[in-house]
Length: 329
Image (cartoon, rainbow, N blue to C red; front, side, top):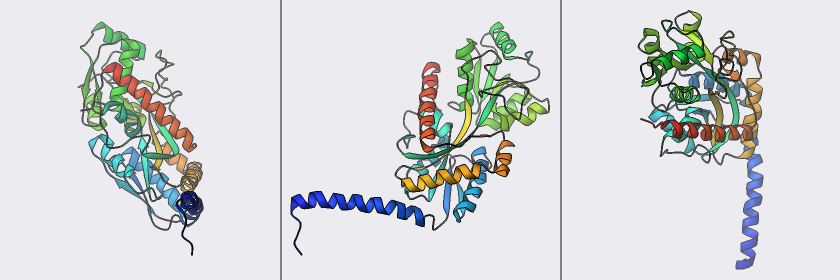
């Protein structure tokens, strides 16, 4: 057999590699999955990310014919689990349930992250979103956002609000309210949304933004008063509560959202199949009912739509962080 000359090798070998790659991806997609798939989450077991991932994972398991297991890797404000997913092999066997923290707030407040929220991931589909609720302790003499703003302005710097920690989405909501209304209110960061809600129930703080799944029960029980939700439309779990725009604060939309993705480099045919299967799962009535009970508005879409959403969220959170001087702990 004659050896290829340098010129011929330079032309033929890359062409053969390209051809082989083109053939392998569809073949890989047809044989995939041949073993269990995991969904990494950056939050703890029992969190909203955990619940949503289990519901989606169970549906995907039935569609794919393989177990889908949840791998919870909490820590470092979500950076730990996100890095685990980003550094995993791009073979379709590791997925990641990203959210507004891992792919919105964190890139805006951390000067150095062990992952790139855009370059290290291949988006699959948006899952859905949950609005935040501006709630006050019932002892606060305000039944509307306008009344609350007037109350704070009457005593600048003397009232306070809780968040789940510096750089949390709850914190971003509070700072955006300050920017939109000109109020002077003190930020009290807690170690998670649970302690913040407890402080609000106990009257240690006057106000908090928390997602409807975490706070809806207390609102319906009359233990807290909801003044507005941060979504473009009213929340199904709190239909009588106006949106921030209806309450007089326009251009105020921040939600707790979730999106399924994979490590960058995952073969396109696998991404396409996962997108199609995820849309089917989220279209099932029983799945929509389970997620709606947690306040999630299901809205699956294309990988391109999720990619655009992530870039938009990072840009928006970065703008708010710079204006308010928000930094992670």
